[in-house]
Image (cartoon, rainbow, N blue to C red; front, side):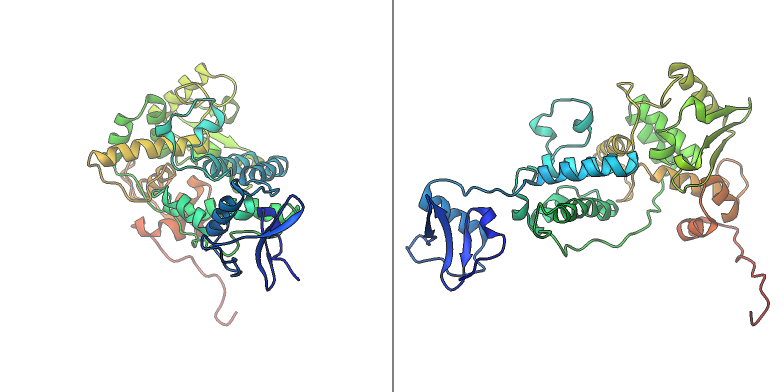
Length: 376
């Protein structure tokens, strides 16, 4: 006699050669179809098993398996202790959405959600061992604008479930093998017409964020949102934002050079308003984060799209940085196109990374010199 491994956590289990059964008041009872036949097929769908259990016993099967929400909470506690804050915030926003079906802003600002705010029904209440790949597919379908972001979303969920297996909360990852899209570099940019429409349709704080990120090339999350007065050196007609290696994405010293008079004045005014902490904040005076910047951008972009403004399908807040790259390469502000090597220094990237992403926009490019002799 044998039972399907782990199936008892669902309230019922499979007995080899005999069929599906449940233990009720200390005795084994076999599940039956509506016509009274015993359910003997090992591959019987879970929905039919649950319906049979309810039909015979008048209740839902009990489960001692942890819920998806419980597993995600345990995983995020681990991430909070071991990983960078930005990593924690990103994965917490993703898993909050998966569990509750609500935008990430409800996770941190205490705002009470309305029925119309719900993106999908949420999967946090499911016993984790009943989670299926279909649930993941429906979650992704509820977010048609994610596209390029799907890879990181799926990875966050997989990591949470793998951690549960590692901690013996689950016997196996129920979505193991779910296909993760290949990583695609985002190279979408924002035209001047789109920029104006976005800024006009946004609250002043978001319009400021879009303008500053486009004109400085700052990464929205780890640079723009994290800028404090301590990062700023004001030389009068020029300004520098300096991030220590432990603060930068690449682990190297990062300096953003500012010569745009309007951006310099904006930064000075923001420092006067917020002399401590992040100087760029949202409409409730809370510091911007990677998550809420991206979400508010998508809301405004979607609103404009409904009004007839066309955007690339993958246009996101990070597209502001790509826009900076294209405009610098093509001399949009200076009237003088520049090269990949100069752009790399301005953006805090290697020339190789900039070639991979932005070479298509470069009007002046020469292959890197090869200083080795033939045969070496």
